[in-house]
Length: 171
Image 1 (cartoon, rainbow, N blue to C red):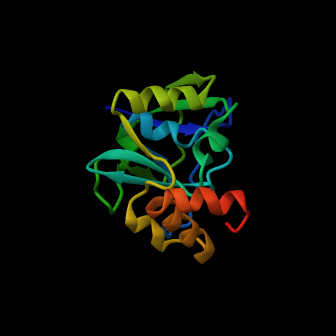
Image 2: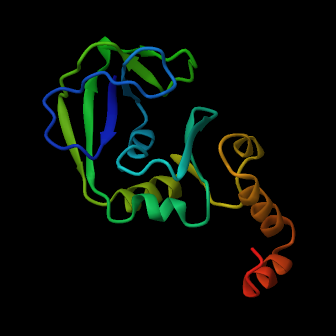
């Protein structure tokens, strides 16, 4: 099995462990899901939530246009990594693997247009992209400010009213 690691950092001879904010120890993260690795080929991840549903990678927009803003004009690389030094994460979802060791890539796959590659993966059903405001309810719980939640609720439930409010600059 091959694993993939996506990044905008080119020419790495080794992938070294790092902290991601969710794990207690530094790890190298990898996945057997190419589309999942594509999500990380950007320096701007803060506009999106990343998740997994039924072993499928998902991207969730935090605001309208966040997907395009995050990936437009971005290029990078997918590093192919040997699986023998990895184990499944504690989530045990079959697409997230970690290693405590530095890993030497066996191959690199240049990504010249991350946005287009992700759109292609979405059209083939390899990744799910939730566009704002049609996002899963559980993603409301994280760091979305109350005014943004309110705007999304109005937009989703009362699109005509939302349109009028935007025109007169209430929201």
